[in-house]
Length: 230
Image (tube, rainbow, N blue to C red; front, side, top):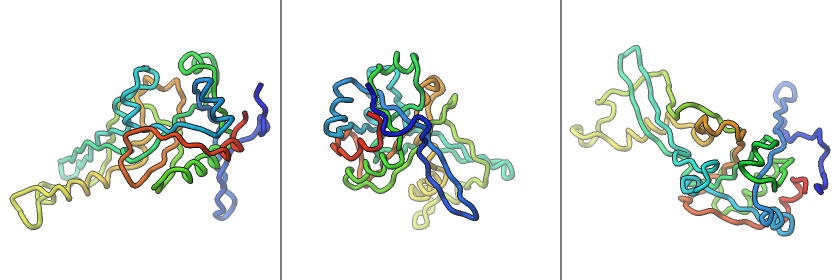
């Protein structure tokens, strides 16, 4: 039986004082994992952080997405009748933890009945960050579901001359192309998913590091349990 450390009406929040208090609430989140992994979390605070590389290799269709973190950007410039397009990948240096804000038979059917209930996701993700070597930034967001992963932006698109090398004018500068691509990139790419997964109502924790991440990481942090109902 679940012991509730937090009341059912509880919501995690961040409050920022501007001219008056501004409060952002987050729902209770659920991490569905096998019973033995739930028990490991209860005993040692053990939890496995994944990555986009692992997501692409899942055999389970409910968890597999080969295009996680990928995006096709189109910068449309109707004033000058031109456009700039680029394909980018993000999150290759990040650990990921997928959770859901939903409960019910559909979620249980897809991911099993055993779960960890994260009632204070803000404190949870902050303490996980302390266990990750080289962690530089943390993000939390509900996933955004769309029919494709194409980002359309209106603005001034570069000309071919704008992209030429300063030292070798007959060649295109990779640095300038990357600069244009980076200007179009943003956090939405971390959380964009195919609409076929919309029923999962996924929230996602992202821990960015200072190195490429290709394998999951198991951490043990007993203090994480204080943010959960167990």
